Structures are given as structure tokens and as C-alpha cells.
Image (cartoon, rainbow, N blue to C red; front, side, top):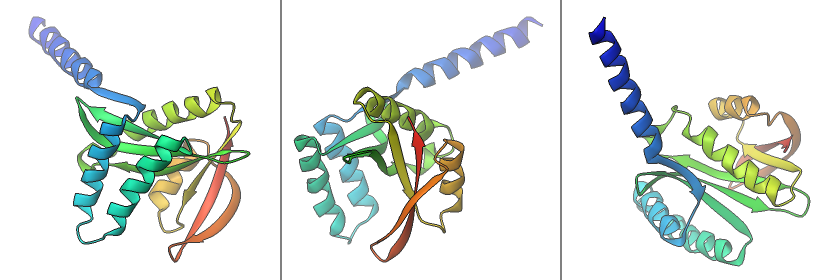
Length: 166
């Protein structure tokens, strides 16, 4: 019996220590730069990512958007951005490195983003998804983004936008 209890304590301590290594927060400029270097490396040959890096950093500096990161230790492993609109805030560019997918990290980051928007006075948040991204769509519905708002064509793809009250 003592062995089972010891194993439980060891497993619990390991889980607790791992959880403490993940942080969900506003991105500092160094975090943004590091995360975008990863995005660029993952999309070699597509020069749009280089342009987008500088656009995102510039818009963050001007306060038009606010990017948040998931840090594992000091390494940015995921990101999401709030786009500030006149009557709502849009959650955009949710990305996480493959080894960390499906572990609840993005849900935790979105909650931090939603709280930031609430604190800034926003009452409505929207999120966009392509119809073919059924997995993402079901996650967004689970998060409460289930009120259809509008559709747009972005870069030749249809994007459906859903909202939720904050």
C-alpha cells in the first residue's frame, strides 16, 4: 500500500511541477519576436509570415491588438491575439505547437484573453473559423462561441464568425 501512495505522491508532484511551468499571459515584445520566428520557420518560403511578424509587432505597440502567449518555461509554445473593434473584440490567430495540442492550454489562454477583454470593457467577443475546420469549430462552440454573426472571405477562404457574451 505504501508503494501505491508513494507513486501517487510522486505523480501528483510531477503534474503540479509541470503545470507551474506553463504560463498564460500578455506577450512581451521578446515573446512576440520569438514566437513569430517559430511561425516563420514553420512556413519557410512564404514571405508573408515575415511581413506579418512586423505588422503584428507594430500593431501591438500601437495598441490596435494585444497578443497573448503560452510559455513553457521561457519558451513561447502558443499564441492568440485580440483585435479591438468598436463594439466587440475578436479572438484571432490561435496557434500552438503540435506537441502541446489537445492538453487544454489554448482553453486556458482564451480564458485569460476573455478576462482581459472584459476588464477593458468589452461585452462581446467573436471568433472566426473556416467551415472545413470542424474540430476547431466544435471547440469554439464548446467555449460558448455559438451565435453566428457574419461571414467573410479572407485570402480566398470563407470564414464564419461566432460570438459570445463576456
